[in-house]
Amino acid sequence: MLAPTDLSREHTVRPLASNQWLWSGALASLLSSLALAWHGRQRHGSSVALLNSPSHWLYGDRALRANMPSWRFTFWGMLIHHLSSLWWAALYELLGRWLDNRSSASRTEHGSAPETASAGHDLAKPVALAAAVTTLAWLVDTRGVPPRLRPGFERRASRQGMALVYGAFGAGLLIASLARRHRQIPAATGKTCRAPHASV
Image (cartoon, rainbow, N blue to C red; front, side, top):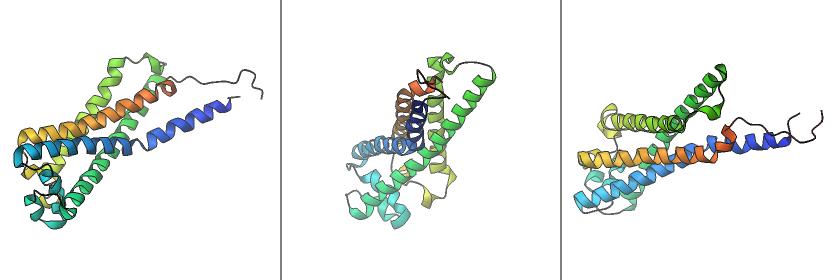
């Protein structure tokens, strides 16, 4: 009979996986917002110029010309950017869990223990996935949706600035994923704890 510690371990791991998209989305949003602020300062002399841009969803082209902080443009621009980041983070985490489940099933089928996977292989998967989701986000944001639904800052940023922003976004996804994997290493070994004198 398994000891109660097995159930407690299971319940401590599942919440981390279920709400990870909130943390990865928040970190991706924060880092990309900092990149937007820095590039906006360099290119337009205003740290909020590019952060205002997503509010053009609500206020049209006026938001694309706004260089001063305001409740109307800055707040809504940052909120829209944050919610978009959460959406992409949810996709990233969903795909990551799907790939992890496939890897676990494959190792079980071939009789391999989870700990036999190399550290380089474990690192390559989240890096590749973060790059893929970030590239998809860039394609959708700049080409896949009508101009009114694009983030807006692509019209004011340089190519190098766009690369910086989306690179920071992808870095946020990756850092959050690696931090989660580090916290869950003991649970990922596949070992179970049994009570010393458990009885049926």
